[in-house]
Length: 104
Image (cartoon, rainbow, N blue to C red; front, side, top):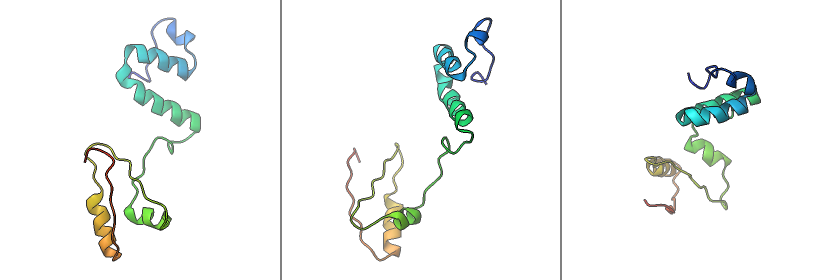
């Protein structure tokens, strides 16, 4: 992988730490910077907990919620949890008020 490859010539010795290596990588392979950042965080923090996303269930969100604090979903394009949320509310015999702050 380009983000793990040795830099050519004297650049490998000039860029001995990973941050400098990422800067050079950004110049030549901007498409690989995200992978390089993930490796940087994993090595710096000692594990992959900060770069992995664990799926969260509606039941877990419900258990952590309180009645007077709204639950806000920040979504990526193409993701719509409305159906899952409405089904869960029906199982709990509850009603849900939704408000879209985006395009949908």
